[in-house]
Image (cartoon, rainbow, N blue to C red; front, side, top):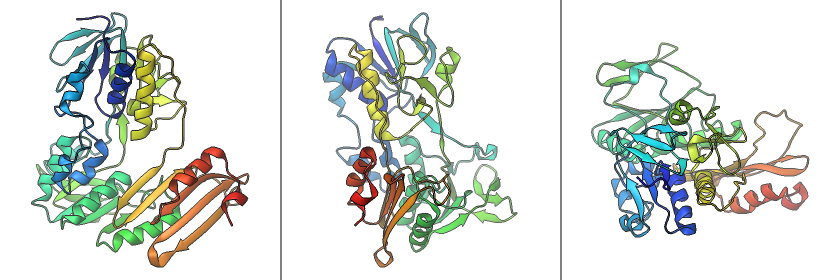
Length: 395
């Protein structure tokens, strides 16, 4: 195989962004992408919507590129071929089929996997996580015959999944072990507002309780809580976080903390090997969101192609459009600060479920939450970046 190849492991946001950037800079260098998924790369944030409506797959932007995009750009897309080992000294990879490929530069963009801490979830046919198109298809099909569903986790993905199932007439319960839903994206006051919106859509919320076990044999019947209560369900979705896929890096001696450690060029500690997206950790942060993955992939691709580029961290918002409302949360919400160490500005119209909360530290905007009307989101995001003063934002 051509030892001058640039190999990309992973075909989602970061991997495809890297390939696009490489090809924009060098039309000749061989580019090979490997993914264990069997589908053309797609827009993963659509998956929770897909479980409510399969026609989402027919949208023009569901797949990241048309089939001929890869062929026309001479990008070799190897679907269903998982990379199982990296040899940084011999500069080669090995796939599960026993094939070995040489590289001159390697980009690890192999993402993350769902965190499933419950051993008794294994093997139960109606217990799911949502990470791939296969996952979404399985959840969609199970919902056809389910009257009730339990979503474990009240984060963004869990809420979006609950919304899609509710729209299909499934009776949904959300179980969140923390003291509120969206605990990382909302403060307590805003979470209560959202909880009221969600429960008005006939969703049951169980807050601040943990799971003792998942009941049932080959099919789950529900969960038993640590309090002894039993919550029955015809299907269960586990959505309590992700873990970066660091095994490839760990096994070949690349430095890993929580994720694969990279510098601002997306370089790992092994020469010629880059990492980006959910699998990468920059400045102690594993961001694991779509847009930073795209940006990191672009930087990794540029450097792999020989054009120096650096990743500049930015304000990446949390966005949700479910249960008849919209949420946009960005920046530092001062969740770990004491009252008096920051200043608040609040505007609310409870009748219309509109709410705006601005967080200031040293008189400068550091974060905000918008519920309902999110039309100011871009202006406020820019204001965080610019360190806009309280007097310039509050009449």
